[in-house]
Image (cartoon, rainbow, N blue to C red; front, top):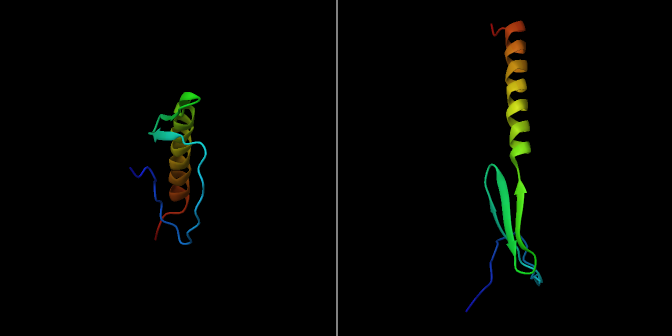
Length: 72
């Protein structure tokens, strides 16, 4: 059984892995599992909330600039 993961890079260097953590990510959480630790959960909702707030602020700023400097 081959239990290796091959990730292509421009230069190849073999690295011995001691601890392996499996990760699953989505917009709202980062979840991992490592046998000696167990499950790992990182809540990303605060980051998503900041993303929404700053996207809204950026949209307002762009709208104001466009209003002051109309395209001719």
